Image 1 (cartoon, rainbow, N blue to C red):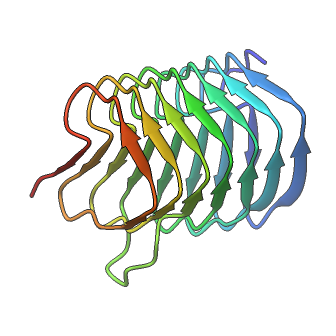
Image 2: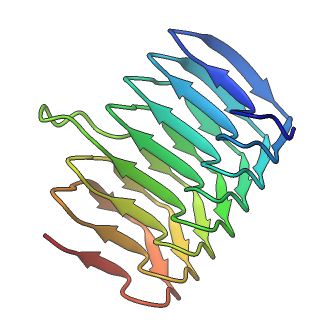
Length: 178
């Protein structure tokens, strides 16, 4: 905790399992998964960081399951540059920015992760923010009580959204802009 950069970095095709850890108060992101990293994160608390809670980029994969991600200054989860991680049954809440931010997808339409069964609640920004060619998949998530739009899609963002419950957000449930 209270590291000067990321709490945990899994990079350069790194693998591994992180289970039941408390990762908090870091100057960088809580967990970085980069450059084809492929870990499994299960039942961790990732909180109060000065950047993103979980940051996935550069063609990384892996699974992030049953984690409690909250109180981070950046997005609770940020996925960009062809990150393809599976996020399942996480609680992403009370962040100071977007709950989940997917950005900088590829022209080939590679998705920006699959999100299923997550609770995304009470974040200061959008519950889910998708832009710049990102193309994530969201299935059966609850996106609620946010201080902005439940889902905000802009600047050539895309995605597949099905069976989500979106309610109680301060502005639109779903806002799509050019």
